[in-house]
Every structure is written in C-alpha cells, then in structure tokens.
Image (cartoon, rainbow, N blue to C red):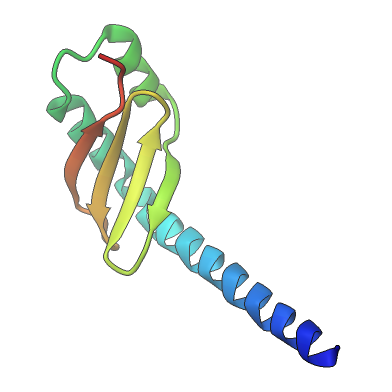
Length: 98
C-alpha cells in the first residue's frame, strides 16, 4: 500500500515539475511575444482585419513547450512555433477553417 502512495507521489511530482518547466519556458519567451505577433501577422495569408486585431490585442496561450520549441496559439487563428528562449519564431500553422 505504501508503495502505491510513493509511486503516485513520484508520478505527481514528475508531472507537476514538467508543467512548471513548460511554464518557465513560456515566461522566458514573454519578451518575444511582440516579435511572435509580427511573425504571425506577416506569415498568415488572407488574414482578416478581425483576426489581425485579435492577434494584436490578446496574449497568446502556451500550446506546448519542450527543450527545443515553444508553441504559442491564438485560438482558431494560428499557432506560432518558436525555438527555446530567446524564442525566435520559425513557423506559423493556420488554424482557421477553410
């Protein structure tokens, strides 16, 4: 019984520390958000004025982070992939419905 609690505790710590690591990457990339915004606006074809305004006015969400990439997303518009800090953007994924 004690082994189960120990195993659950270890797994919980591993999961939570991974989330904290992802969050740290996002926080380290926060100064690059203006550059990431500009990259998204420049690289998305046929961006509507409303979507452009939403990218400009709202903070992106952290979609994913690991040791190599940080993914920022504007829901239903786009996801921008950047490198690890200092977070140079390198790809935009269009999430708009066609």
